[in-house]
Amino acid sequence: MSPSRRFASFAELADYLGTLGLFRMRPELGRLRDVLGRLSPGRPAAAVQIAGTNGKGSTATFIAALAQAHGLRTGLYTSPDFVSFRERIRLDGVPIGESAVVAPANRVMEAGGEKLTYFEFLTALAALVFGGGAGNPVDVAVLETGLGGTWDAVTALPVDMVTYTPIGLDHCRILGDTVTAIARDKAGAIRAGLPVFSAIQPPEAARVLREAAAQNGSALYETGARDSLPPRIRDGAVPLGLAGGHQYANAGLALAVWRRMARDNGWRPCEERETRALATAFIPGRMQFVPASAAYSHPPLLLDGAHNGHGMAALGEALAAEGIAPSAVIFSCLEDKSPAAMAAHLRALATGPVFVPPIKDNPRAMEPETLARAVGLSAVPVRDMAEALAKARDHIASYMAAEVAANPERHPVLVCGSLYMLGDFFALRPDCLEPPPAGV
Image 1 (cartoon, rainbow, N blue to C red):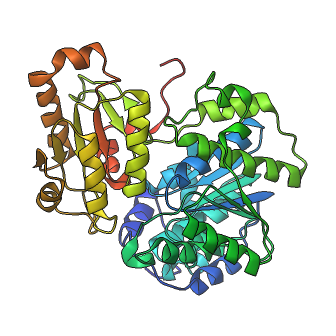
Image 2 (cartoon, rainbow, N blue to C red):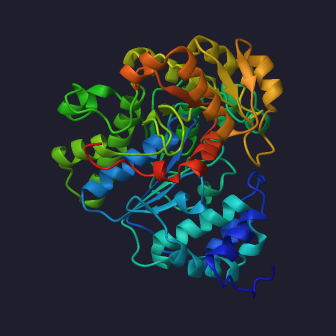
């Protein structure tokens, strides 16, 4: 496609992005910076980059919710998407509209966007949208790192602070096979003189972040303690909008970032609004309960984005704390996510059958037969997500119909292992991408 050609419709834009290859990445940011220089996208009053391994999306969602609750126009950039790339670029919690995204995408192309990878293009598009390229500019931009830090496209954007969720083994084929190596790559997002906020880290990751912060002259704040949260959230009187004990650390980290952001910009935090924001934050696929559906012919489900060993361990702790005993599991994962470690955690979670579907259109996904052998137990490869749901439904009907009917939230079918696999579910149930109506 030549830079002079324009997208005539959303469908044409989506088709073009589909040709770029979802997982292309290159160790340089020069081309993206050139495009951003030509775009001059504008800069929000406050911008924060979220890096780390687990909890990036949740922490970013909490920060965005806190800003929105205080009346600030907020842009949220996350990955991956489940059904449409529009989910990655949200304005006040709503994915950018099909009609609103075409004009800024054409501006990206005119600025040299034909040279960009998929993630680079969307990052430039998000920067332009948040800067006012699709209406009013946002006050706050919350930008989730896609992969690593040093060469991630988000690192090319100007921000006011960098935030780290817990760092662990992830993308080992790209970032390195030790926590230290991975932390070094992620530490490349730290900018000279800008504050750095970090969750409690493994010792080797903490050491790398402290060294990188010192070398950049950046203050490092290690935070995220539950006792920093508003009293009703901290004491459990008001539950977090995102379920699981590990979310209290994400919420505490987000709150520290928000309060620094507010201080720097003269915004006045309100404890009541902070409480409401943390209690109503929503992101799909994080300990998300989906009731049984006769229309879609599936049993009660619990969707979780745990996609590596650390995430699976946190999921196991959350299930135990909530007294949840899954009736069955639907599981798949990517080859670069330490599948052996994930399978070990899965064996501790699964007392019933494990159905293993392929992940649609994903070259990094493990073959179901290979993964089923690694899982062991009663792991069963299936053709697709629809068959996995059907087999889980039939298993419940045959072996524990009464138990599940009596307490569906205690005995859901657990769907976990990959955010991309959850995308296959959301393609069947796109209505589940948005929060349920209040009171449901």
